[in-house]
Image: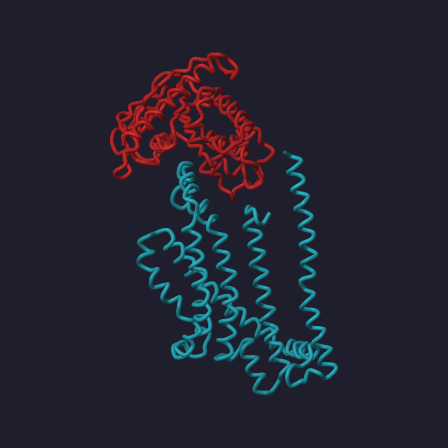
Length: 250
Length: 269
């Protein structure tokens, strides 16, 4: 299963009017790989995710999904949004079944069980906590067995404890279900915790592409983990320092 | 976490009980008013020429019920209200959807609709009588016209203000066309549409009262005007009370629909 590329970006550019958000990106993602994309807010990482999802069209270059150029919505991917975006007028189970046809209910229940919310199938989203909503959103993103899971800062709005639980859950499901995962985050430690590879984007360009060869499940107290996290964080801060200098010179 | 949730549920149940008590109390004032009215009439403070006693009104009602007139008139009035509401409501709803979903339709129709909206529809009564005489069409036309705009405005606003993020999520999850409309746009706009419906139910009765009073040969308004000619104060008051009752019934119906359809909404849980 784990050979060949799931996703390829060839010289992908994106402008919004005169503003260049992505300045020519060449990236490949192997099948089943877990890649984290980090960078400061406004660096273009979320735009990159939206391009891969097919929600925006690149201004230049092309995106290949399983070797075929992407045109319109990316049907082999599913996105999990930061704010969950559950439909408040649908019960939890119905939310997971959105857009599905045929006999989806047993599938949906199975996923709801895997995220630990089987007993909430008939509740309205409004009675769930923030973390529970995100678990439902994760189940909804995975029920269709997508080849690619796009995670747009899915844990950004959660408290620290809920976050750790969600990270473990995402990792566990990824290992079980064997999809390619693209995680956009501003939390470097989260990136090192979860990803096979961390990509740093600065001003619309890839400035670092680093493999993380740590055994799973990763422990926060291991020396390699903290040194890698510190290394990447240093690089991020360096980027920041450069930008500040630029601002002073300008 | 479950314990706090259970606490919340208990609290809500308590509030519900309180609400039910309040519900009974809310009828206290109308009943008190009725009793006072009766007593004032009994003691002769309230002259019969100004306001007949509630018991007399009630007797008039029973008498009219016996001849079958009352049922006929209520029936015909309710029918006019319902048909007019249905026609105006559907037109307003469709226009609201159309203009909310398509910017071309919005530029094309919205200005005209806003101009028409500002004409008091009851000002058209002379014109409507010239067009339709005092037949059914006149009343139905006026009701439909009055009901149209609140439903149009609220449907339009509801569709326009659907969370763009939810629409995007729906598209990512494979919804488009009719399934997008049915699963996302309509439920999201529904609270706003219901506000329009409740608002227009009020307008529906007001329009009908005026239309029936000015030009009709059946219905509750006609009954009142006819009674006036024969100085039957009790029947005039009966008609007025009937309108109040019908208005209340339609409001309760709208509230029930609201509660059933908006179960998901945090403010109805």
